[in-house]
Length: 282
Image (cartoon, rainbow, N blue to C red):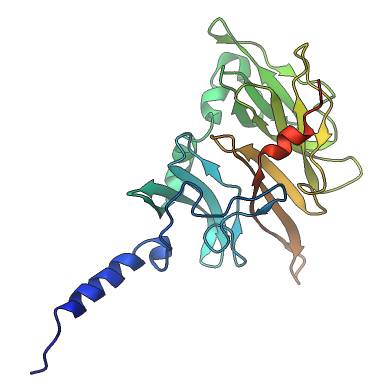
């Protein structure tokens, strides 16, 4: 009878445990709140290549919970026949991944942003086709409203006054310029607002920012420049809860041989200093 070293079962056990994480396959031991990635500078980079951003799939922009212990994104392609919400949680000094079943996706998303069902049930917002919203630290909602005539939309807001929301106010032409104005992000202190929109003469959206003026009005929309915006699609800008990085989605539309279309793209990130560099000097 051959002798089997007691170290062999132990080694096999260690190998099995080390493989039981990312995609149940080969998850690196990442220990910080940004998946062990080197911080980007002022030029956007793919976020977490091979872990979140991949060549074979399409991933949406990354969203963090306020405590930075959990992030999520959606993936489609290959074995992911339908968009699948993937959640990565920071536990025991490492990140582990799990999938959210389709029936639970809306419930999960309620944790990340104000729930549209909740907003639509409030008296001032009933019968308004709100598509997506953002909320400031003092409870002001910023949201875009769908225009059923042409599929575009416009940005509006509603303040919380004496415990009740005011009638939604359409934002000025400083914000509502171009086509398909969408995906607002409001700074917690409401010092700036970001969104994406298409120019009237173009078919791909760019990301814009407006800064709050001393008199409380919103400044003119500022295109965030050629490092953020390219000839591809740039959308869904948002700043991480710690204020360090700006995340957004960059991708493009492709046409198959049969004429049908599909999307490719991944989340990108850049140092949030790009926002301050655009802030007008007072």
